[in-house]
Structures are given as structure tokens and as C-alpha cells.
Image 1 (tube, rainbow, N blue to C red):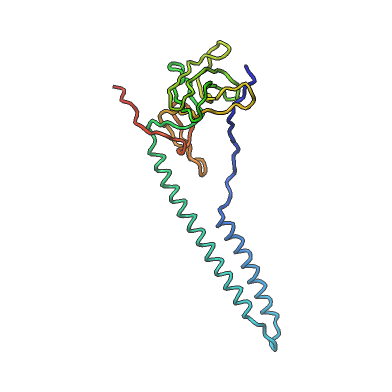
Image 2: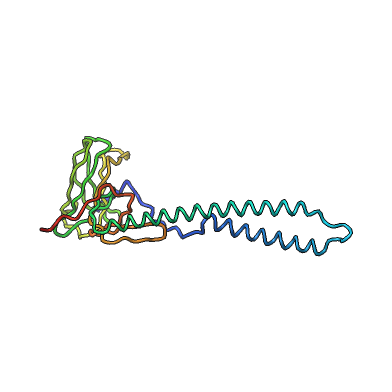
Length: 232
């Protein structure tokens, strides 16, 4: 369609779960202690009865192992406290079910009946602001001029594309850009969009909120929370 590419990009790399710091430290401490005790036992068994070994050095090392173990246990306790706090956060996320939220996200949802309704906020004023809509592959499908003065504005896209066609319903990416003839184009603000939270997904340590529009957001993106308007 066009060679204009989105200014913002996303990192969708999936990072595998890794053991906690305290688990790694505990495993290493256990291995080292087992090795030390094995060597100590062998040396005691093979010592000369007439010239017994000085055990003060071994006592000092055992004391150091004990102090390390206490430190590792303290770290594990802190991790447990953090996990409990995260559990409280999950309860808060679950409480968003059925609520209408607005989030700072570059995703917008195109409905077959209402088009795409969203807002944007100009944080870097410009005389020539343009809203650009991209599909999932990053191809530009629509663009139109918008107000570039400082402030918040409502916006909408009826689904019409730059080729004169009509885009399929679904989730698209939107950017409000300060137009420029040079290659130094910049984002002029942020896009705000949302919908009703219909599902909460816990993926490892991450929580995803699924909206009725098909969009996926995280709790830290939320800017506003409201109730679903009464249909009556």
C-alpha cells in the first residue's frame, strides 16, 4: 500500500521463566556445603592420631556457611513477600472484569457498525499533525489530518483506506505524528483507547486484560476506569 512504516515498534520476544535468585543461591550453597563436609570427613578419617588436625579452621568455615545460609533464607523470605504482593495485584486485576477502561495504547479496534472510536492527546504541539493507521503487518492503511494543538481530543476512523476500500473489522495500530518533509518525523502525542474488560489472563508473572473489542492491554496502561453504561 505504501512504504510508510510505524514510528513506534514493539518487542514481542517471549522470555522463558528462570529460577529465582534465592533458588540459585540455595542450590549453589548446598553443593558447596556437601563438598566441604565430604572433604572434612575424609580428612578426619585419615588424620594421624599422634598429630590431630587443627579444627578451628573448619569451625570458622562452618560458621561462614551458616551466615550465608541465613542470608539466602532472608532473600527467599523477601521473594515470598513480593509474590504475596503480586497476588494482591492479581485480585485487583480480577476486579476489573466487567469494567470499562481506557488505556494508553497504540491499538484501536475497528467495529463493523461503529468504526473505530478513540482519543488522542497532543503532548508535543505541531502545526501539521496526522493520524496514521497501520495493520498488523505494519502497512499503512489510512491517514488523516488531526488537530495538533496541546490537549486531548476525540477521534474516529470509519474504516476507509488510502486506496478507497474498506478495512476489515479488527485491531489496528494508530499513531499521531508531526508531519515533516525530512526523515525526522516524530510522534506528537499518545493514543488512548479501550473497552470493557471481558477476560483476565495470567501468563507467568504477566497479566493481560482482554477487552470486548479484541484488544489486549496490561493494567499499567490503564488511564481511566468506569462502569458499563446502562442499556436502559
